[in-house]
Length: 473
Image (cartoon, rainbow, N blue to C red):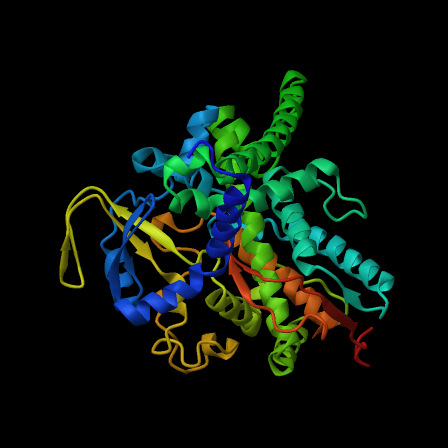
């Protein structure tokens, strides 16, 4: 095997890449149909019991342990161990994880805490809208914005960086800084090859390039995060040395008021950063794409937003609560294209019975969220974009475990409230200013699976400026 030819190596590399990016989510639906609600998987480094029925998922999660374990995070931890980096909220386990999450939850997870970031997010949204106007003007039609995936990635990174690092990093400028673009590329690289290194046996690392590409992606992520954190630490130290008050938001709180070493902060902030970027950008891409193809839903959203926002007012975080259809659009987008199409639980403390079946401790469960959020028994016409199904207007609402894109319980996503705040504020303002129309040259977009679900091609959208109503100032 040491003398594997370049042509054979290329064949395996390209074939593996194609398989891991195209088949993962659709395989959930296929295996559910063939094997039923619960089945065993034993592939490469992965051994797991897959669950794809809502009642079984609810039973498992309600029997969760005091310190829930994701499991299947070994390749993330392996990078940390290689580089001497502390674990973060996604990689730490047990009581150490609980203590870490207790610290990280403050100023982020509770709704009243996330509201305080409304002005920060709105400032980023304002600059993003300016960029949309600029890109429209440069297009042949005067209203086309090309490669929305890239543009929304820039918006998401600027938004989460403004909160975590308390500074702007230039993502929405005409020319994005080279190191910022390198960071974006690193996130994409790490997520792209994460599945390869999970599923492929370890011996393939010596012959296929995926492992090194994966490690290089992580290196780029931590390089960027470390630089931003070090800059903030230096600024805080200068204020301390000058006997000045140390005030600030999230990172300042972690660095100056909490017993966390810089090593611990590097690990935690880096994981929060990459999760925040991918979550918001992908969900917003799919939301805009779905709305562009559904004029009725788009009009309902426009009416919902303008009912609250008169004239040129910018929405506050609190006003989002008065826009039920806005929230429903995001919920439905997350149902159709869940942030994490498959999650996991490792039951490590004791034996467990699920669906009448006994499983010994140390059993790993794969939670097939994509299959469950497309279950027609829970969501009639699951392939249709129907935000109305989430409205609290007297109708029977779906089983809450049918779509849990941010997880459940104490192990739920720490950045959920921030991600929702960003998506609600930017979508409300975009839909108030523009009618979103598809680019006919793009065609119907299909999904690929990375860590989340991404489009299979470049998505361009027309942002047609709306005429101001006569009652507007």
